[in-house]
Length: 68
Image (cartoon, rainbow, N blue to C red; front, top):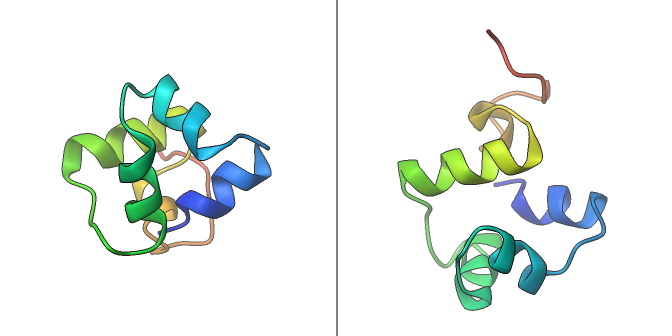
């Protein structure tokens, strides 16, 4: 998952991301390190937050743009 890359591009901490999404920082760390897999609702939160497609987030495409 590209979560860490997206977060670092925006220059935000795990804690800020967690607070913005009403999650805990430990969960963000686990997602970034592949210890935990995000469920659908969490994937949608991440994709919406970074304004990218879920496919981009999951590295299924290199095109971050949303398809409508």
